[in-house]
View (cartoon, helix red, strand yellow):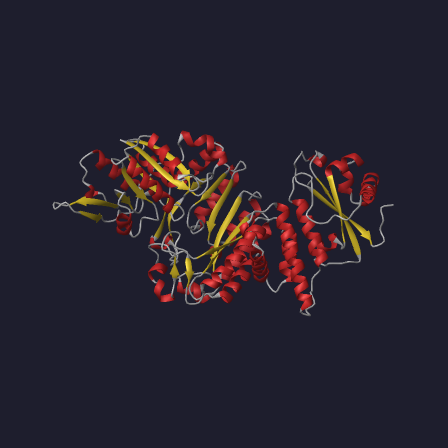
Length: 608
């Protein structure tokens, strides 16, 4: 038999750990190929490629993000190759298995739960006596004596002994692509928590792989060129000693590789945080922390134990160390959370200033307790994957649409880090709360129809400034004084725009008012008297010609240095902002990060 294991990943850079686990377990005995595609690939292209491999069995790994695209592929495969055996597995089809077999008559088998042993047993029966009733963890079709067909759901398979599983990380064909794709890695299976919106709550208990085997696999991947390894453990830090040992091992052997973990912040032990703060090199670790909600009745309803005070201490300590980026998750639409309480949740979490704040919407996943209790809370949701909610008793569809506008601009601006200085100023000074800023900006964005068109970097800046101009005019028209400085916001946006370039930008998005004689005068002065700026600027040793080639300047109507140091906006003096790009100056090569300098100017300052 020729077996092809396949899936449709969300993006090309992603890889499927599940397929590799199956091949590692059965590849020594069966002829197995792995074929990965993306949900953006045309179905015809996928089918043509699979057909060319001449398989006898094709196994699809199914998730909420790929099931509908996978079905299109299955439909075509069945028509062009009727003898093909089609097997589905993965979390999307591991629950409501009879439903899937009825919906998809093209499918021969479903493997549910952990698949390694079940899939191997299925292949053995396909090759041999075809006693499918003996394969625990399998759903199959049985032809009865009267010619009718029945769907048989076998008992589930006991949990695997992880120590018996071979490594999925040693395939020679994967090595050339390790540096350009994400490697997914698990050190454990299971979750200690019971969150009713999550599939992980269904499996009770946590099992671990052998620590030395885990270290050996990690070292092999690092030495083979992996650049990003994402740990898929549901709660990586549940076992303190195990987590600390892995952290220590990676710190000693990272070689520039980056590692991402899902952690539960309120159970992170102080000694682990202290160790990371002292020993972790900056940038090699990323933490993903699921907060979801800070509303106590909500957390109680979904059986989610969370101490937000302890979570805050952990996130704050990690942030203060400056070593680890943090990605915090929220879910809109959980029970007992209306628009106003979600606004509070958002502001509670944004106050922690995470590097990323992921705003998602509740998905009623098959097999979860919350889907079972949907009527209790009045949920309505999509019939097809991803089963996202359309409303409930407290959060109507109209509010969901509003929050989606928040999500849109949050992704484009805060999570993309395109204007950190300006956004922090705005959310702290110009609006009642961060949520209100993103909501009002999102509403304005949609009212202009910008969600229907693309954007360049300069468009994002120009659109934010258009919104701020309109917002200021509206406040003043309604007799409300503004307690912030539009000049400061504009100046910080200009700074952020310059910092978004690795090379000197060819154009700016604002009306540049400095005429050529003034520009030339400043360049001449900066070349002749660089010490007026700073010793660091003087150390670059830039001549006037080099400044014209590699630097940009702009006057800001406030004291930038004072703002950066104290947060105070002072218009008593102005600033000449100087940004120098690459060119080998100060040890930076061409395309190196821009270097910024600020020279304080009196109001009467002239170029001389």
